[in-house]
Length: 165
Image (cartoon, rainbow, N blue to C red; front, side):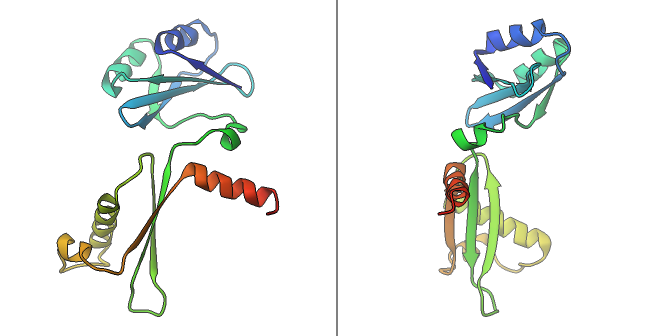
């Protein structure tokens, strides 16, 4: 069960509940924050979607005796019914072997091709797998194939497999 409240009602609700845990989790979704706390009743999540900034909310929750932590509660059945709001990025790239390399990443916001390639480039440079090449030269290589999959598409694949299709 999910209880969705406006920010003011979310604060009132958590203050009026006895024995509620003190960790409120947040997930950044663009310029909005999704706040969740594990409800007092079994299988209950209390959720709020707000446009307030993280620093303001962090101070307010600290003043109320709650900790704000990065993460999200969700009810088990929510996985089948609601988009979890993340993106899977997959990039194939040429290697010196007979098969291409695959780089995989996840994020809460849909990245652009340029941001994904830049992140992959920085990871390869940091790990020592790539050196002596600028990002511009790396980026101009024709052998990259970039694909983005939203969590909703991944969910459909899981549901399709559950159905035996």
